[in-house]
Amino acid sequence: MKLKFLLPAFVLAAALLSGCGGLGKSSNSGSVRLVNATTDYSALDLYATDSKAISNVASYAGSGFVSVGSGSQTFKLTQVGSTTSVFQVASSVTKDVNYSLVAYTTNNALQMLTVTENETTPVSGNGQIRVFNTSAEVGSVDVYVVATGSDLTSATPIASGISLASSSGFVDVAKGTYRIVVTANQDKTDIRLDIASFTLADQQVVNLVLTKTPGGVLANGLAVVQAGNVTAYQNTSARMRLVADVASSGVATVAVNGVTLGSGMTSPAVNGAYSLVTAGSLSIAATINGSTVSVPGGATAAAGDDITLLVMGSASSPNFVVIHDDNTLAASGYSKVRLLNGINGATAGLTLTIDYSDVANGVTPGTVSTSQKVASGTGININVAASGSSTSLYTNSIASLASGSVYTVFMLGDNSAPVGFLRKDR
Image 1 (tube, rainbow, N blue to C red):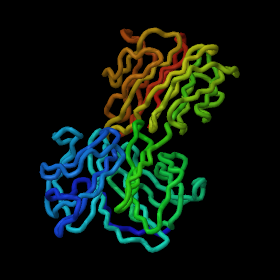
Image 2: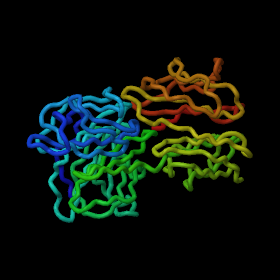
Image 3: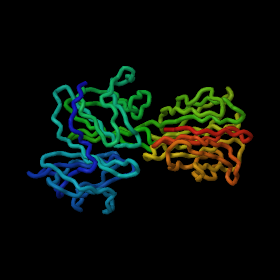
Image 4: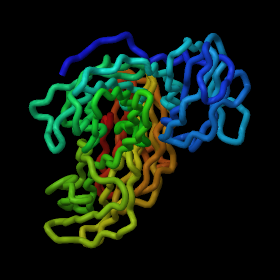
């Protein structure tokens, strides 16, 4: 594959428009379409100079192109049925240039990416792929294009280290059907998106846009074909990990949807590594101390979720608690910390303090607090006690919390001898 470097087309604040036109192109205009690459907005409208240009673009879909006059313009997005702007930017459009305006969300804010769609047609037998990363949550990623059914063992990425607000150059790829895999930067085992079958047509130019998912680590994909269709490639997986917390040091082996989350784990223990499982209904199979136990049905995982599966209680009748993890990164200079209470036989809630300030209160067994932002640094004092008590159940007076990272304070084990520890989740 030949990598061809071009000037980046990832422009966050430079979009287009000058006056709304019809679907036909005038002699002094460009063309735009709206792509709604958000899951937060079920449908969006596009306005130019307070006139509606494009209507009702559904989540993970794109509109057709409309003609707009060249020059300066104010561009805004609204939710369908409203004239109140949810995003607005001063913009410019060039005559005879086509643009896709890609609306996306990151860091809890709606943003827009402008993709210029005037790339020269590739030579016969080839197509081209360019990658955009719109997710601060996903972080820096590599992208592989391999034969369908192939693994990544000997593969070389077509794009490497693509982080928020950046894009790859165009890559020439022979026409055909491929597997496209997005991984964490320089880690082939940390798969963020796996498109099992992607067909690149002859002389086709594709912009692959990566967007965030609920858990904050996995990615969704959107293929924007130059002057062609917009196709969603949303994640079909969730990430799960096991916390073995069966009373009296019970030994747990648990699989979910055929994927083993932990084997022979002596409680209390946390498997720090998340595993990919098929999203949707969760079929949980478990043995405790070598005996198969009954697991209630009904648990589900949304695509893109990060989940901690907490197994606690007695060996003969354990409880399986599905905990949704927010592993979106903390802001620079801060960490995110939460408290998980897995103490068997306890009834009282727990309080978490960091540097003597309350971070969580009344966290009852089998539950977790909401992550809170705290200043990162070293020599940090972390303390857990029963709510209303001054007796520490866990203390760490020399904790280090890295900037931007996510942590859980686990309180596990039996009420007679609880065990606490700090774990970096991301």
